[in-house]
Length: 192
Image 1 (cartoon, rainbow, N blue to C red):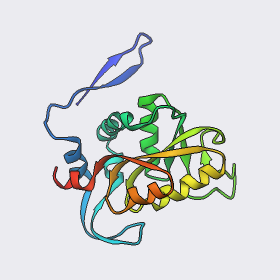
Image 2 (tube, helix red, strand yellow):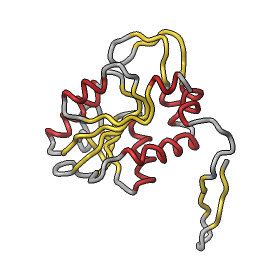
Image 3 (cartoon, rainbow, N blue to C red):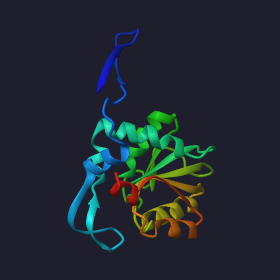
Image 4 (cartoon, helix red, strand yellow):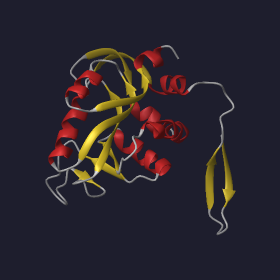
């Protein structure tokens, strides 16, 4: 549900209204994104269930509600949000709008053309970044991207995600000195 109000200069802004239903955020994510079948995950593992992040990231109400809930997971001292390609980008953008922190968009590898940068949107060196990711399974991409950002001079010690699939990601990130803060776990989604 949305309501609109006009600003003094006549522009119209959407204002988020509290939902009238009693569904939890976990059940809304589960309903929007949970698929069953046979899926090969980035980690190489085959799973009989999959959370299609694009289904919760493309719903403006749900994306906004996720950003509202995730904002409290951003550690103090964060100077910019580093959204990982591709699923972390809309989340970082929505979080940026909620927190006022700038968003950076981190590629899996630097482009070979144009700016030839690993991350777009601002400076990396000397800044404290928080990684933003959609779903963490083994944490492989978070570890890889964090190391690349550290090699470019960033300080990174925290990753925030919507879903922790509880498949070793937390342990793998801890081994790389990265704290994982998840909004939801697979267990929470299954019980929603």
